[in-house]
Length: 197
Image (tube, rainbow, N blue to C red; front, top):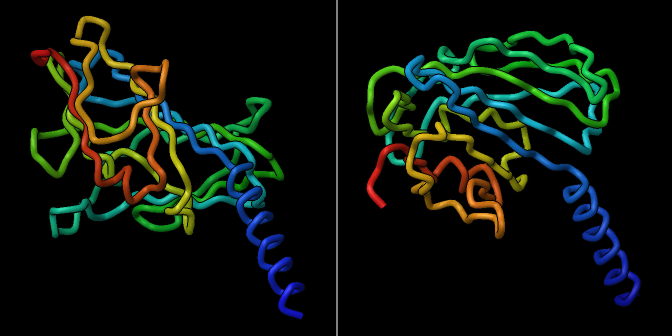
């Protein structure tokens, strides 16, 4: 009986691990025309297994204990399936978007985040620098905060190539980073621009 329980636990963990590994969340953050103070964010979600997906924007950021209305800065939200078909969605709370996936196994979500004043708990972008407070930039799938995340930054080509962040870089991809989960991502601000090496 003890051996049966052990095998059962191992198999259960294997299937959970396989399911998690099959899902991938990869973000690309572009800074086209930084003088417009707007980030362009693209989320590629593969291994989707849900008839609908809820994406949430936090209302807090680590180390700053005040409610933040980050979602008000999100514009141009759009979701498409793997064939490019636009998917229906609705904003069901001030910080939650519900997408009807239509059985798609992969989807792309594009949106813009408009920035305002330069402040430690908010995003900022201009022609000289970019500061990212991740909680105010990255939507996360509801109930999936423990998912690993990959992020690629595409800064203005005239900027210093160095990116300052606590995230782990991907070998061979100097502008791509990984986080083991959203808690780590949200706790890792990013700075880039015309900074000194």
